[in-house]
Length: 299
Image 1: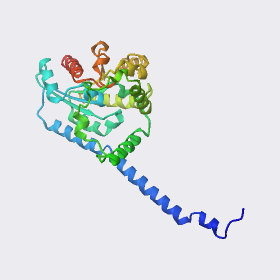
Image 2 (image 1 turned 120 degrees about the horizontal axis):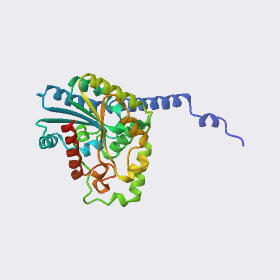
Image 3 (image 1 turned 180 degrees about the vertical axis):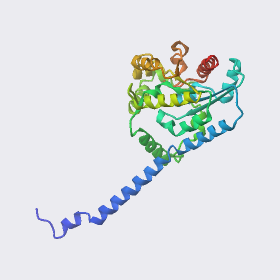
Image 4 (image 1 turned 30 degrees about the vertical axis):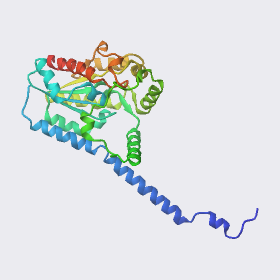
């Protein structure tokens, strides 16, 4: 079919349009990458300041730094209550500094490790599954983009509140639907798990954690890996049963590089003690904290 003279030229966008589009894309991509580089900056600044305050504080009988994700925040009490539990367990003065990175992996804490070694706490606790977490390379960037879109559409801050990350307790079962019988909720949770982490016995994190444990031991710091449980449904999904996979447990138990291995008893928390498959309720967290403080007192 014949075309009018000049019609083909009008249909093809001129080179300058392509150049402008490419330039705009690069500007947007650059802005996203700069924002992403700042994504963890507040986490590092906030917790480095907390470590500096710990270093400046008068020495106590037992100083503990605990590294974990949101499960650790919900499983343990805040510093004043942990100190009170310590007194009940016979530890006259317990200072418990918990550092949390939501949906974290050991690599998220690497910028803080040298400062932790300089502070020289008596004990460093590390969430056990950090040894084996292999995170999809793009997961943090996708979380950043999701938070960015959420903030744009709802007018909320892009970056997490560092105080809330360390101390907030939004996990409640009272007044909520029973999530354990809501199959739709569990399906959404499964998708999130599948997009997040895998557990790999040969994950690079294992060597990094063990290297840190050896460096800590050389400075007189004890390291303990703490086993945090989840609901039976979630553990069946992730761990192929009501526990961390046997090969992973055996690898940690058989390693002789100076780190302790503390396993929270399975009978100490049932499904009703979790408010969303993974986080302990307030009452259950007190039970976990009492168990943990007793382990610290007897170590």
